[in-house]
Amino acid sequence: MAAKRATRSFKPVDMTTGEPWKQILAFTIPMLIGNIAQQLYNTVDSIVVGKYVGDNALAAVGSAGPVLNLLIVLFVGVATGASIMVSQYLGARNREALSYTVGNCMILTFISAMAVTLAGLILTRPLLRLLATPGAIIDWCDSYLRILFVGSLGMAFYNILSGVLRGLGDSVSALIYLIFASGVNIVLDIFFVANLGLGVNGVALATVIAQALSAVLCVIRLSRMNEMFDFGRKYIRWKSRYGMGIVRLGIPSGITQAIFSMSAILVQSLTNSFGEQFIAANVIVMRVDGFAMLPNFSFGTALTTYAGQNIGAGDLRRTELGAKQGGILSAAVSAAITGLILIFGKPLMGIFTNTDSLVDMSMRMMRILAAGYIAMSVIQTLGGVMRGAGDTMTPMWLSVLQQILRVVLAYALCFATRSPENPNGLCEMLFVSLLISWLAGCATTVAVYRMGRWKGKALT
Image (cartoon, rainbow, N blue to C red; front, top):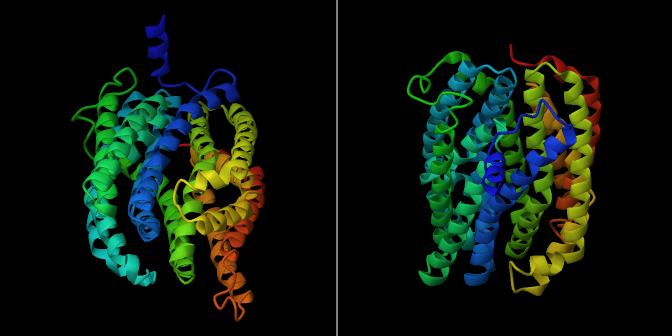
């Protein structure tokens, strides 16, 4: 009996039948756990360098984030495009199209990884200088990023192929592989930094090894899913209909990620003007923020798969019902997690540093953001439905407008609050601007979703 239950756990979920909220929740839970495990990659990196090396090393790992996120937008694009296509072809029960889609995804993953490695090695130092990264941490940032970019093949294959698995309705396999890799990452982090004294280079090396392991496991899993599609040389060859289909659907999501990254870079430049202490506080807030956002991203991805399968099956009514039920679930979970962070935030942030003033500053910033997480749950769930239906352009434009608003407000509010005591303005304004952009993004996303343009975008 136990063996049967385990087998069912690994069986891909058909989201075109059953009670929508139950299917969405069953799919989301393992993915949420997996996203928590993935968030541990960067979080453990930050904890280890903050505790064993110091606050400047913590600032270095965090300052490297916007540059890394900018240069991996190709992975986001390919993963999104592939996930949408496989979910719709799965819903339509089109085995051949599904097989070629997975095969072309493998080709695009390799190409994107090579491009990211090359771009990363060339652009890392210039981008760090453009950000006015403080001299005390720029060399650490540079070496940390270069190791990650050299090892980007594993990062690409894990992130993209786990997206394919989710599109196929299998969120459990990616979870198991990621938990295993996260355990490896934690052990190697401590070994490389605490035992070998490799500093930020050690945490980068640990991340590369762990992601490569999870990537290998994803490839093995896909090769064994022959009850759904064929995985072999015949299908791992370029066919424009499928390869360009992935690119067409993925480009808007890649651009969205690029806009997010560019806005983060522009705001990071402003963040750096407040000095190393505030940079470190910002890193702590963003690490905790990453966990607070996980339910939103998890439900958003689940609804992309849900909408893709049901649109592929031609059931628009069920798609809309799932959007409503999934949105309510996402908002409730987000509210609960935000409440826990507000209650237990100080001891949580104390994990990252031994500096009390840094913990107090970080907690003050987190309180500003708290009200925005429910708004983000609405943005992610409705955006996920639109992307799953094949309308990736609308969420892209909404994100562009949201990020433009965030950057303009950040600079404007900091400028407006300048004083002799605070020549660069109040640092809190960086988080106020983020909160306002989330609330505005929520209102516009709801309005655009109700217009219904996304309903006519399914693959033909």
